[in-house]
Image 1 (cartoon, helix red, strand yellow):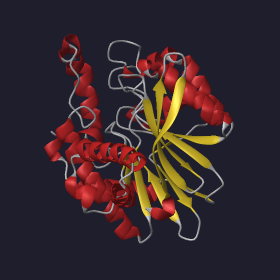
Image 2 (cartoon, helix red, strand yellow):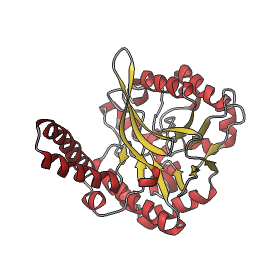
Image 3 (tube, one colour):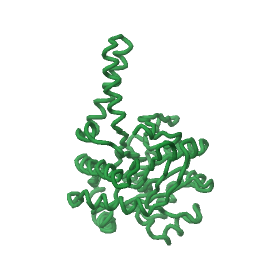
Length: 339
């Protein structure tokens, strides 16, 4: 049913969300933010994808707590298409306690997605989240305006805005899955088809997201970056970064030394991976890119990805499970002024 989505409805959904969400204004060196999404916490059963990532995610939270980051949870934190809020919260007490530390330090923002859309009901938020997060408000998104010689607004939203089944009829999607989908899909260990699970749907959705991000920049008249989750596909792809990779490759090839050729091989591998990963030739080579994606906290190998915003830079980061510890790596980094 993804064919029922269209560019104008999605853009309209983002436009509406942009103008209704709170805005934080910071200097380029003031506040640090880290953004995670799409945990899909469940009941620790077969379909609970977060349980593989629990240790990695908790380790990451410990790191960001001590580093003074503000934590933004960008939707689909809980999996309510399958589970009751009480069940989910009882399944992950350590994780909720860590997030509570951010909240008590006034460093937590929660944004709802489509799989945790029950949080649209303030009574449910108060009943289930209230005891740990007293007075917490669920947001539709967030704007962070980073001041400097050229102000940049980073607009955070889950990414389902304006879509037919995930936004307009999210109640129907939840009803269908709870009554029929869980009986049909899980007994055969199949995964339901969404942009997070189906490559063709993901590519179609992401093409529209790149276009929406560019359209928002044109309408607002100021550099605006769109950061989403929803597809579970981490994206960090600015035109400057792609052009710089091509430029660096030419320089290394011209040097023709053993050291430069070794660096060239690594750079070429990174470049070809990026091209194959996206499959979006026109977005990769011909369009301005203001769209970024956090990825998810529910990868099968226990790793998680997210976005950091600090010191005038935006970074795509990955935390991996190394059996006895979790390691952080930077997958992409760019100054906001260079995008």
